[in-house]
Image 1: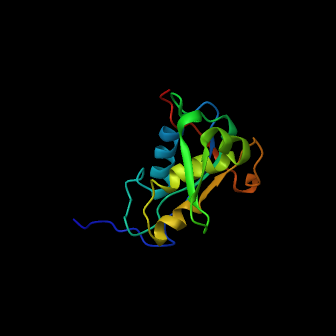
Image 2: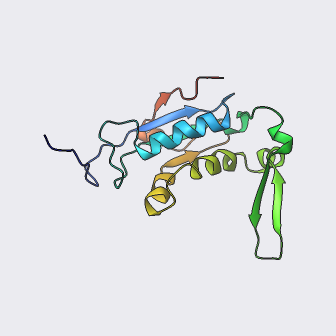
Length: 145
């Protein structure tokens, strides 16, 4: 019996549509990362991008548990002699897409393949998205509340 190894370009990638309304960030991000890597398929190969494309809408209605909206801080380096920080509540007002995108990014491999996987994630704050031509099929993720 031979072990199956997927080849680049031979894997059929589907488009999935996920509604993030009232979903918990971490649970949703974990399932999205699994699908982007392709670990949900029996043909998963670690060195080949076997995952699907994911379009996430209504990301401004996403939830955190507990007091994370006030207590969770996002920090980044600006080039000056300190880090900038902002709470999750402020980030939701300014750029709600970044909350989910950063959570998924940190769950993917930290290499070129991981960056290619993250490029297949399309996140939008509202219900509208420009990927209707790809006919993404609606999918329910993170059903545990």
